[in-house]
Structure formats: C-alpha cells, structure tokens
Image (cartoon, rainbow, N blue to C red; front, side):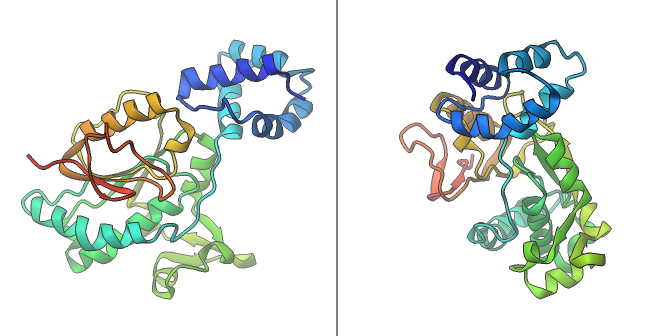
Length: 270
C-alpha cells in the first residue's frame, strides 16, 4: 500500500508538471499503479519515482500519466452540447467566416476519440454540400499518448456505437470482423490528433471559434482552473464559445465569460 509520503511525492510531481490535482485521490493512485509496480519489479513507490525522474527517454513519465488520467467517454455524451453547436454556434461561424470559409474548433480532451469524431460528424452534416469549400478540420489533443493512439485507430465495438443515429453509423463507420467498427478515412481526415499538456502555452496561430473542454477541469484545483479558463478565453475569437462538462462549473463571479447555459459560455463580442 502506498505511504502518505510516497503519495505526496507522486501528487506533487503530477501537479507541477500537468496541473492535475490528485490530493484527494490516494486510493485511486494506489489502485492504478500497484499492479504496474509489481510487474516492473519496483519494491515501492519511491523506487518507482526515482526511476521516473532519472529516465531520460520520458517513457516512464508517459506511462505514469497514461495510468493516472481517466479516459472514460462515449458517443453522444451530453448530446445537448452538439445540438447547440449545430443550431447556434455553427450558423454564427458560417456568417462570420463567409469570406475565409475557415472553421476553427479545438477539442482539448480527445480521450479515445468519441468526442472529436462526434464534432466532425456534426460539422459534416451542418455544411452539407458546401463542405468542400470550407476548412472544417478540427484539432483534438490529449495528455495521454496511449489514449491518443486508440483515438487515431478509431476502432469501436457495437456497444460503443449503440446510441449513434443509424445514418451516422452507416456513413462514418465500416464494419470489421468480430463486431468491431472502424471510423472511415473520410472522417479521420477531419480530425488532427496531437499530444498536448494544457499547462503549456497554447501554440495557436489563429484564434478558435469553439473550444470543447469537457470533463477536464475536475482534475484541477481552483487556481489552476482559473488560469486555464483565462488562457481559453484569450485563445477564442470574440463571440467564440466554450463547452465544459455538464457536471462542471465556472466561478460566476470571476469568469470573464458570458454564461449562456450552465455548461456553455461565450466570449464577449467586440
């Protein structure tokens, strides 16, 4: 079992590098790392952390991050966001960018790919026959290399697709053997996956129209969350939208955003 001192060492390490607050998650940390420690032959957590800190290749740190970041998501999750995106946000973008025909969307917690592929399907439907003239490619980032590899592979089972509309299933997925389905190349080309740490400076050359940052901020303490929200605000076009998870909140008193609905926010125009 992990000691208080070992737990403290891991939680400080992860907080300093990634902003993730594990201070109340001792049982979870122990549960996720215990088997890996045994398999790797480390006698205790301190010995494991010594190896992580000495490993110049960064592969042990990558493994630690992959094990500690939860990646549970599914198609159609919090679907009201996609409805709002299609019915309110995209008509605004189409009008605003009628000249440049450039849609800039960032999904900041790509996880295993369900959310960015959902966004891509909505964009495909919305622009319809006009989509050839528009750049609708979106950026999807995550901290975990392992989960990004899953997302890029784009393979899901029938259970994972059960809530998707039949038309989407037929158009955007190809049946494989053994009840598996693979995202079509056409849809894959619409999503650029990249590894990215939200604590790093945002590298965008142009400002975004929409940022999906759903179910990410639960991992951050208030100070880190506030700093991240400000960075997101600065990265958005005037009038741009932010979507967060329906169980998450932003401090109404300090957020620079206009609150549209409890989990939908907008940067002030002009």
